[in-house]
Image 1 (cartoon, one colour):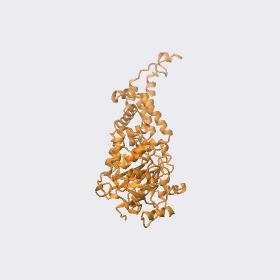
Image 2: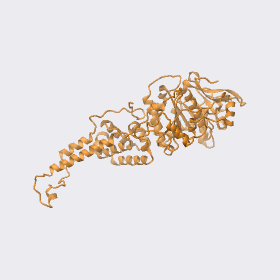
Image 3: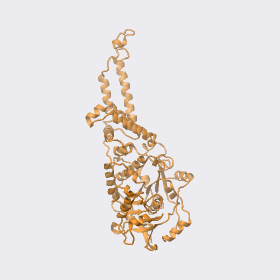
Image 4: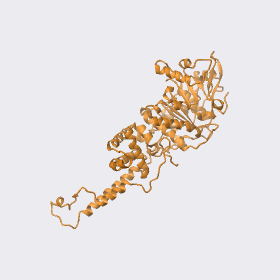
Length: 507
């Protein structure tokens, strides 16, 4: 029924509800991306779980987000429950074996998994502007900030680096406006206030070092199974824009770092975007266009991207066209928009003369779906009404004690726990400002005329005391400030950013 070249999804049914055939996802087309949709409670999480299990058993690493905590059960062995055994019999899954899978837990806040971090430079101005919901003028200032950091050799690693650079830009607003266009202090101030809000929301935990190494989410075990990286996203969903920005950054990093490999027998990595509508909600057209470009091109690097969402209308049409493997759970059609979603979902399938697709979508039971996978030569199969197979791992969340044990035994334990704060823009600008201040104080002392006579109480009048008699800069002061403005220019290097504005860095 199933061989090593495919993943068993379930069994399709004839019009009389009898067994028809096994439905499979061919591994050689696993990098042609996919879509799992359906209303809440219809079985999307279980479909994601069995796909992750299948890829892992085939030796393909998986990265997925766990929105409700239910997906954490994939790390523990399943239990023989009556409804699971019955479903296994219905889909002719024999033998029905239980497994636990190699899982690495991650968490942007470092509470339910290993911390995940990225540097400000890696994130790039486009994704940062998206995260911060900046206006067009503010986004322009952000681009200028990154340009200056590149030219002056200033590393932007964490939030305080960006805050220090923006403060420096505000001081140099007139000079920079002449070079790059209008740079206003109000725009800089607005960005600084937004950064403060991000910091209070916990985003400061995400920006910094050590940054995530892509190799750590592409691990395989000694027995040849792919590791399943599970991102704890229940708290992260309180800041959906951070969640979306992080996932877009990660996809961009994969695109930048992985080499072209062409067609493979199986993917090198499979990436699941849960709550995918958050990626595109209120996103500017330029960002959607670039996401579509990454999705279209990343499959040649052996990466499959699977979007999981409630409504197929959540996915832009250009992106939807790239998704070859599809699992459609039940949709409700109470409102005009929901009815349109049903029609859209039905129109994306290759029709089956045995039933009306649009009608079937509204009548599917929990754990049942319309399935269409790519067949030979990459042609979509005729849509089939399918009973989804039961998972081999545990259904539902694990306990906190079980999670802590898995984290302690993780292959990346201890690698990301401690924050590294090396010299970067904040320290360099702070150091240069102090040097300039010390030099200015020394110049004032030299100009005070220590050998000249003074009259008590009349120092300010004669300009020979500690206070300056003029607001005009001395030549030394001007030279020192010029040095500060060109910090690192002698060692600066051009930083090449990728398709979503991330930094292409060597490891």
